[in-house]
Structures are given as structure tokens and as C-alpha cells.
View (cartoon, each protein chain N blue to C red):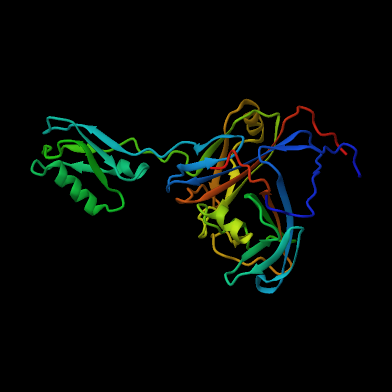
Length: 219
Length: 136
């Protein structure tokens, strides 16, 4: 065991039966999905509401079988991906033209025959993309406690992070209810407004709860 | 002891935790004019604005948490302090050199020096035991 002389064993607090939970997580991508997490007392850490990727599955006039087209980037921009038939170009050509014109908002045919030729003015419109709750993630504890005393998150990254702060994103009463019922504590990444942390951002948690129902006396 | 209602036992899932309380007094241009704290061996100002390396006196098994805040009579440029470490290698890095790097940031997430006369307070928490059933 590493040695550290002069350490003191006893630490005092006005609160009774406090429990401190240490945990960490790392973001997997630029959409706040969590790659991994660890920590005694932590049941899960996950993005509260993931980004959803826009898609199209079906057929339009001129087609005979379904095709599935999925946006390459999750989120609402995929909802603007529109292929308009001209009666001459197949789906592959239409999609290639869109991708060249919109390099930051591309899509891919993942299923079906993309050699089909939609009728003139037939429209293939991707939809269903959403940004979820940008930069918000949920932490569920393994146990229930009587009171939440402290919830803090430190940001860890080798370069300067786009995230300045991570705040507990719920009312005080809801946070207290969450630790009593086992519901999730919600944390929001912010730089003055909601921000989604970039891939590879480390998060270190310190959550302190009180096990007993006895309040600390004043004075 | 001043108050008879203090409670001695604090529970945690981690074994043999060690809490280090430290302060960094800031001089001109963000320089370290002095530092203090049991378990803190050195604090060095790096060439980048608002960047400091905090070195600890002892090696521990695992780094659990770092809390920082700026103490100042007036609101200053620094609005956040980030741990400037690679999350994927942080535990090994800190164990090897017993040091962490912090970066002070302004509201635009740019490096910024705390003002002269300010103080950075930090609380570093380590685990002394090598037993870590919850380690990833």
C-alpha cells in the first residue's frame, strides 16, 4: 500500500451517517453518449435522451420496393435531407448529389434497391431526427438515501473542454426525491447555455448523501 | 471541540480515502505567490495562462475527485477550472508523477489567469487502498 504519513483517521461532520459516492465516466462521441462509467454506488450513467437519427423507410411514386435511407449524423439536421425525383435519376444518384451539395449533412442507403428511379417531383423526405436533451445525462445510484447533501462533477480533458460547468439540472425538491426513490439525478453540461461535451470528455462525480432521516441540529 | 453534535463516522464505497485541502495564492500575471496544504508538495505556474501543476507529497492508489474554486473579492475573468488530464490515462499518469494539472478558463472557455490577490482553493480526494472492486 502506498504510504502517506501524518494522515488522520477521524473526520467530523454535522450530518449523521453520510455516504460519499465517487464515480467517473467518459463520453463516447459528440452526442453525449457515455462510453464507460464506474463507481461504487452508481447503478448507471447515461445520456438522458439520446440524439435520434433521421431516416426514411418506404417508397415513393416510381418505386416498387422499399428503401431505407439513414442520416449519417444524429439530430435534427437530418430532417432536412430531401431527395426530389426527376424521373431519370435513380436513388443512388439523387443521394450522391445531395451529399456532395451538403457535405455536413449526408445520408446513406442502408437497405433496399437504390437503383430505383422515383417519378418526377416525387419526394423522399427523411424525418424523425431529434437532438434529445443536449448535454444532459442521468445518474442513477445503486441505493436510496434519505437526503442529498452534495452533487458535484469535475470535467477532465487533455485539451480545453467546450464545457465550462456541469450543473444539477433539477429542482432541489426533485433532487431530494430522486435520491429517496432511486430515480435519476439529472446533470446538464453548460457554457452559459446548454452544450454537448465533445467525445473523450471525462467526468468525475462526487455525490454525498445522508443515510439517516435525522436532521443535523442547528448550532 | 466546539460542538457536541459532530458525527465522527462518514461512510463511502471507497476504501481508505484521503482528503487533501490546499490553497494557491495568486500573484502578478497569475504567478504562484504561495501555496499551502497538508499533502501538497508543490504548485507550479505553467507558461499557459491560468494553468497550474499541483504536486502531492505521496503516491496513492487511485485519484477520486478534485474540487476547485476561486476565492476573490470581486468577480474575475476565471469562471471555471478544468482538470487538464487525459481521462483514458489519468489514473496511471497521476500515480506516476503524483501531480495534476488544472486550467483556469474564462467565459469563452479560453485560458485565463486569476487576478492578483485571488486564491484558488482545492480539495483533492484519493484512495489509499489498492482494493478497488468498483474500478473500471
